[in-house]
Length: 392
Image 1 (cartoon, helix red, strand yellow):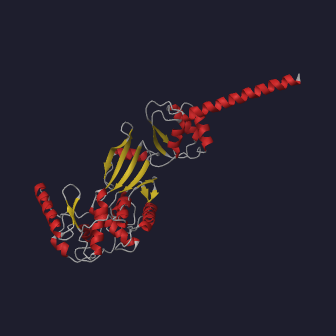
Image 2: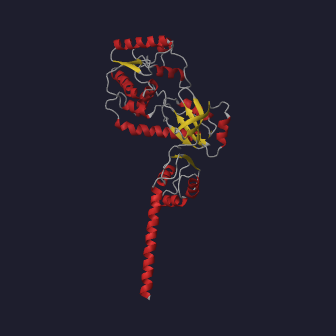
Image 3: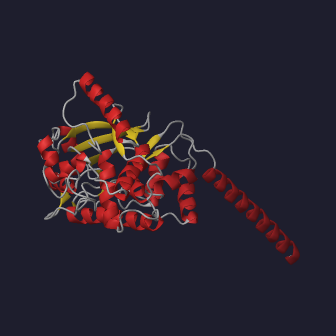
């Protein structure tokens, strides 16, 4: 009798074990297999949301087939507490594992609305934008200059407690422009008493929360810029005509202001390095302009001949070597170009009418390039400065 009971119990145990193994296998298949979505959806993770509430929302939106399996999978993967606030685009057919990764890996939100403060070279803009699921790109909903009357769309977006905020600093913007824009941004708080040293702020996008402290944000920007220079400085080329990271930052800022064409940065850097090595003056218009404006706004006109002759610390047509400080906040690519210029023997360049520049090795070649640019200017009815002449 006892043998029969034991045998039946063992049989039941084996059956239950097999059933459990089958259940685990099914759950793993459900978690890793293609999901039920037939088209992409935008899933929002609220601040402090639990995996339980998020899993129920995912099931209700049809992003996962079973909320319980999603929760168990999140626990098993050790990611149940790693949910990141934001809005995320979940593509059609995404598995539970892929959904979990999207909601826990962090980074910029990939759908929904956000308010962006865009700090550009010439002006700043406050922008309400929304991710378009069809194109997977942000579209502008409203835009205005900070400090001016805000449109209704902005006011409505500000009232949303789950709205995301982003501050984007464009390469080549000055520290004064950053301070001016941050002071006018009404979703930030705290006093900003001083303008950060020129060149000390890293151009990139920064996710912030409503009410974030302005000075703390400046500190973040400065910390990133320090990290970039610290990372790139040890790998600099040998025999550069500048000896310190501070001098390299000055050169990087000049490169940043001289060209907006990424593939030209190394060549522009080589021109200035060659000129410094040969004892030639840099003769670059952006430094002269900075000496006039001090970085506070744009000049808005061409340089006058008298301004090119005037002796100021930033007039590189008059002074030897580098100016006393950076003239803008350069991005990583310009810093890299300053530390590792292209190997070329150019010592002149001028605008070529395409947005780029024509480079030359001799003054005769350069004068021909300048003549072509003058003809283009005349044809286009342009007026004002011709850009860097380096040798005129």
